[in-house]
Amino acid sequence: MNTLLLLQQQRLLLEIEYHTEREAYRRQTESMGLMRKVKRGDAWYPIRGGRSYYNSLNQLVVEVHRTQDDDIEHNFEYGRPVCFFRVANDGKGGEKITYFKQTCTVNYADGDRMVVIVPDSGTVAEVQNGDNLGVQLFFDETTYRLMFEALDRVTKAKNNRLAYLRDLFYSRQPAARYTFSPMRFPWLNPTQEKAVNEVLCAKDVMVVHGPPGTGKTTTLVEAISETLRRESQVLVCAQSNMAVDWISEQLTDRGINVLRIGNPTRVNDKMLSFTYERRFEAHPDYPQLWSIRKALRELRQEHRKSNQYHQKRDRLQARATELELRIQNELFSEARVIASTLAGSANRLLDGQKFGTLFIDEAAQALEAACWIPIRKASRVVFAGDHCQLPPTVKSLAALKGGLGKTLMERIVENKPEVVTLLRVQYRMNEAIMRFSSEYFYGGMVETAPLVKQRGILDYDHPMMWVDTAGLDCQEEFVGETFGRINKAEAALTLETLENYFKKIGKERILEERIDVGVISPYRAQVQHLRRMVSKKAFFKPFRHLISINTVDGFQGQERDIILISLVRANDEGQIGFLRDLRRMNVAITRARMKLIILGDSATLTRHPFYKKLYHHIQGQQE
Image (cartoon, rainbow, N blue to C red):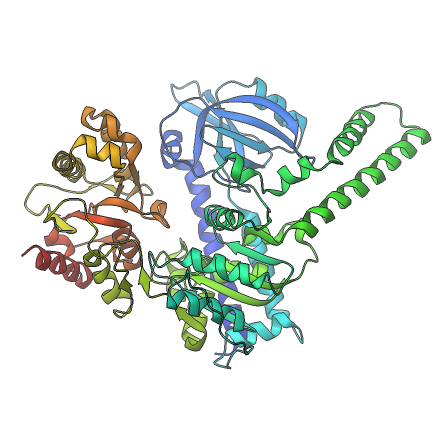
């Protein structure tokens, strides 16, 4: 199939996904109970309105506070559309939800506080003075619009760099290279050093394939740093705000001037200090601009609209625009790295900007259409990620079967194996934990650094352990169409297993050495059930700050000394649902540094060849 047909197919699949997600959102809004949305992290209710003000980009914002701390991790983050709603009695003993007409946007969310960009002062008054108010995520039209526009642009491209990269990525035509003498980086291992040199030599495209614990971010930071010796500025993107934050933080620690477009997920002073908005506010000319904007707002409230009014307004507007552009130009000229999400690269601040190199981190988690958004601004592209870990999220089964889940990075890995460089030494896991993942997913090519090969917590301990729930009456339950499954007996056994292991280590040692734990379940319902159980169990009170409980996706990019995985599924039919997505399991098992404990029903799970192999691998170590 030729390139243009493949891109048209991508667009068609994206349309299927768009309509599926929009319809699911409509159904959810109409039929899903409010408290279910709250538990899913898609809504806050009740909320209290706080102060309102104009942010540095001259957008009217209002603060809202979640008044019930349910310890529920929410899905609100910068740029996501939201709508406010009011809950009233329907007169029949039930509740009636009325949605505000305006769609708003998250400016940033932190803990139980969120700042929302609102369209007008009327919305502010309703939020600040209303009772029984809530806020929920709204369907995200903007990101889809940007992806459709990007696919249309790349499809129509002719006789330019974008057309060249498109034809190159979709063919087996060799990518062009520069020839340099290899540089030495004694602080990197040989495969990391090779990767940096490959990035420097790439004229068109390069893929840094980083399996778990192999120092992908370290390598990428080095490659960006070296690229900046040859180029004045680079663009760094990733699919999620969290991934952009992480790479931005590492670059800032190296003394590189990063300008973050969009707001970070982890809202702390360090992260905020390199955002565009904070830099804008800190500029010496900002107080003058703020005064002019204030004068303009006051002027607009005047009732008399004379010639003098229009002249004064135009004069103030021209001065404000001049100051805005001056501050913006200074901030961009000082920055060495511009960092944003893939969709964030379409921000109007970047209109007309061109970059020699675009780095896309976590590229294996991004839909192809999303990657094309920033590619139009760049001459060459460096992809970094691991297509054996978390894939992009695709909600339509038809779109997934049609190939929407195939990423641009995967396409290039298939078409151009010569531009792929694999990082082969991992620094995270005990050798026994890594060996299974290396053999199953990476052809046995990933090795363990000698320093961590035998790392463990207890002497004569097995690094991997499978607690078999077969025959223990640990049955899964179904808790709603869109909410997933739960296995209460397995959850209780998970915490009992952790408690016993903690007793073996000893309280003093756990607290002194800060031995941290991750409890993972692929099912959100199980995660929330486990969180409630831990919060109620007195034994875990001294250790709560060391225990994180989350889904597989929530642990992406993280690691812990001890990992417990509750697999939940237990049924007579051998149904394992989306546990068949083995890349997610690769993420789960490779979060552990020293001890991995899996809890699952072997009778259900080992009908699948992957789990059978994993089960026997662990049993073999324990003999």
